[in-house]
Image 1 (cartoon, rainbow, N blue to C red):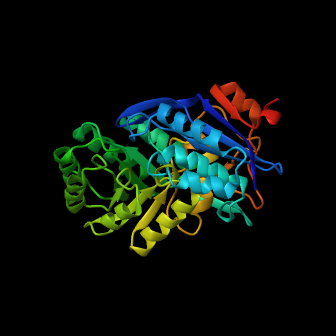
Image 2: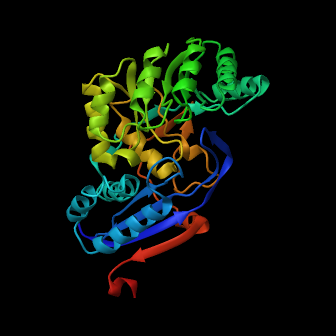
Image 3: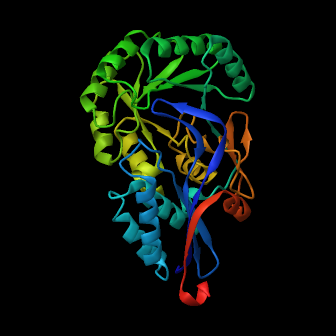
Length: 362
């Protein structure tokens, strides 16, 4: 399959409501979307959103990577393109993921094909701060079918513990709770947080300290009354092996944009499973383009609610046939294949570049 043209766009997508994590509050997503078309008329897409402070990459470095690679890939075969991008995953994993995902969609990768109806349960973040607001939000989300409630922590320990207790009281054993510090604690605060926890209904605690602070994360894991899950620390299969040998680290969180596309994600999930680790997959700051891909590849690996809920946060949907939500989860219908809504892309577009042979451009 030969690549005929590639378009690289950056979008700005306002959110329905602010999304707060330990290191920032999101009011919009700004993904880079890569669209490829082949000479036989097939098309594929991928996205790369690089939130400031979450990785060594930046929006500008990802844009440069995607545009420079796009210019070099036009006219090449998909196999040549994959080999070229795969060799650069360590250089720019988020941007490489966008390119590799576009190739996977272009070629209809087997992991993306849905032959029977699948319901993928999702977790939901609880953003309320007061006890009353939390109780109301939990009830509303429970009625929507959610059974896994995620609480963001990583600020002041006493306030975080109070919010966790409020969510525990609101859930009342009707579901499970996950906690995510998004690297917001240092060792001292993380230890103080887990010392104050009542483990009732809590399934796991995610990424207390910075990605490279392995010793601090390990110390908190040993002291934690619930299983610890590493997220930002997991970039390679070597990291998966390291996590598997840490006391009370029983799960790893994987994202396609961190490991580098569909094939690498499947390999990483297989590696984690073989190492005795449970898996969570998904990206809370992605559009339905990437959330669909993650939901598809999670099949057969995911035993708990997925985190690919980012697609429910923006006001604008990017597909003509948007992903359905039903009873607390994403629905993948048999035979479903997404189709980009180019009018929505254009309406949200901040910048764009198109790469094609001169005759096609003309």
